[in-house]
Structures are given as C-alpha cells and as structure tokens.
Image 1 (cartoon, rainbow, N blue to C red):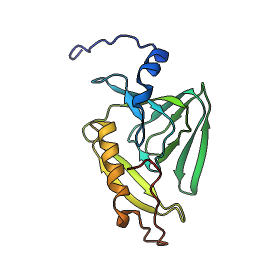
Image 2: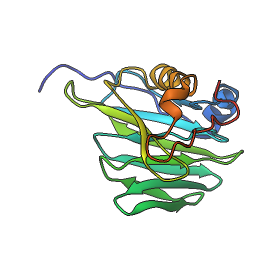
Image 3: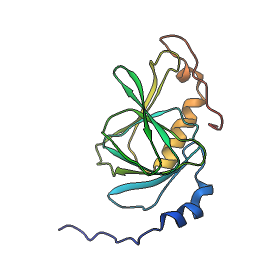
Image 4: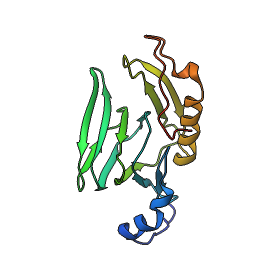
Length: 178
C-alpha cells in the first residue's frame, strides 16, 4: 500500500461558502477546499469575466450549488453551450476546450484530478469575430489560482496576442480583467 494519506475533516459547504465568498473574485474567482490530495476540489463563484478556454488533460466534474451557469465548449464545428442548472452535476470529458460562464450570485464546485508530472494544461483564447485560435499557453499545473491569474493578465496586456491573424479583429479585455 504506499504511504499513508492525510485524512481530512468533512466540510460544511454552506458554512464554507459563507466564510470564503468574499475571497472568490475575478479574474479567477476560485479557492481550493483541500491541499495535497489526489483531487483538486475547488469552489468557484460568479460573476466571472473570463473569456479564456481551459483544456484539462483529465475530466472535470461540475456541481452547481447556487444558480445556473453555462459551459461553453469548442468543438470542431464551432461553439456549443451546455446549461448546468442549480443542483445539477456535469462530467466534462478530458481535452475539451471549455469556458464556464458564471453569472453573479452563482456558486459551484469543480473537481479535477491532480495532474501527473507529464500532464499539461492549456489556456486558449479564440477570436470573438471568426473563432480562430488567438493564443494558447501550456503550463504544468501547480497553483491554479496564481498561475491562471498570471497567464490571463499577461494575455490581456499584450495587444499582439489579442490580434487575430485571420481577420485582424482585436480581442477586447473583459471588465475587471486587469
């Protein structure tokens, strides 16, 4: 059996939300419930202003606790929206570019598996005019909150990265992105 795993105490989700809601702010808006476990379990609040798509090397479980969200996914044919209503659970397969759209007052739990050393995450932006890929950044996930914020702010501060080489449209930063 390998090394012993650290046992964690149960968490009262309603109490946790009350205590930490004010810390869940754009541009990332999430906080991990536990550290050093085999899963990344995080609470994510709306509103979010993100326009980037995440590509996870593993599946992601979405459990919507308060309010309804839309999960926009990129397919070979374009973009599709999946509605996840309050109380619903959705399992997104691995390697699907996705953008959770979280209105104000929403709260959800997202569960991802801890990455193996060779597993790479990606953040990608698509042109809002023609759907062409604008910029993709790969990274080894270590600290999701710190890493995502740095990547997002770097993208929005560079007009060259935000300019589509297909249609020349310039991707506009959302409010509260900087």
